[in-house]
Length: 81
Image 1 (cartoon, rainbow, N blue to C red):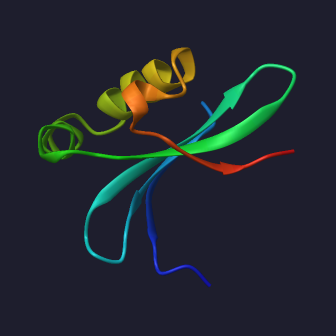
Image 2: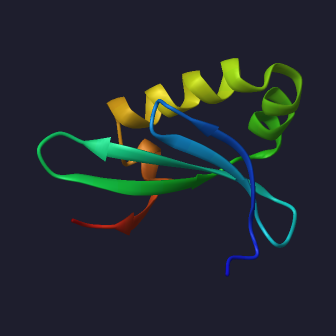
């Protein structure tokens, strides 16, 4: 069982989670032929934007991560095929 709460699950292959410590993160499925998940912890500005805009912000962030999975060195790879 995970200690994380799923706040938003999207058909765009991502989900926003509240971690045990209260921080928010986004998990995104990335890749082409080989797909894997990455997780990015939201910073304070991103967390505020998520609270204000919800799905619209999360969609934009997920698309940015899909386009550049390392996401400036902030992403952590979760799983491989």
